[in-house]
Image 1 (tube, rainbow, N blue to C red):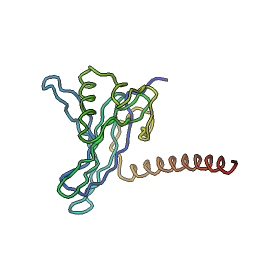
Image 2: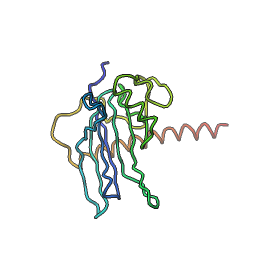
Image 3: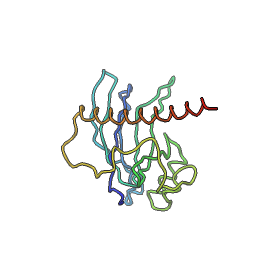
Image 4: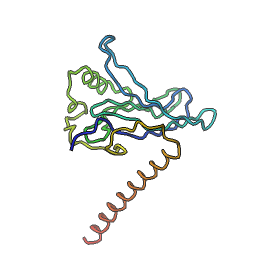
Length: 185
């Protein structure tokens, strides 16, 4: 079976800080400027209040793309901490977590990877095999990204509902397995 050229993922975040809008971006190395550039994915936005914004939608990532998400921010006293995370898309259709926030070590590994001086297997704090690694954030399917019209909020919610129902089913099976094992001891 061949690896799809891209995978579709869902993003859903709400921010109560109007200065920290949630987003999803692909990170790329600009060889001329010698720095990372963010290529923002278009997302749908829904205003919940004067200070609260709900951002949601679907984005595509090709295997070995670096993706950055910002889900909002936490404010503690006078300090605001952005909820930034960085991921790599695996050939099997998962987004693997590789760093958060302003983690200098992760940023250095990502810079080196995007410049071509570090392997994808060396992006995490520990070496891994990118070809078999999995995570909780998996693609909607292993189909090529659709080129059709933009999905509506109802379509998005239906897809999200199906994904959650599948996850609940998997959790139920695991719980049944664990409780039946515990009662037989």
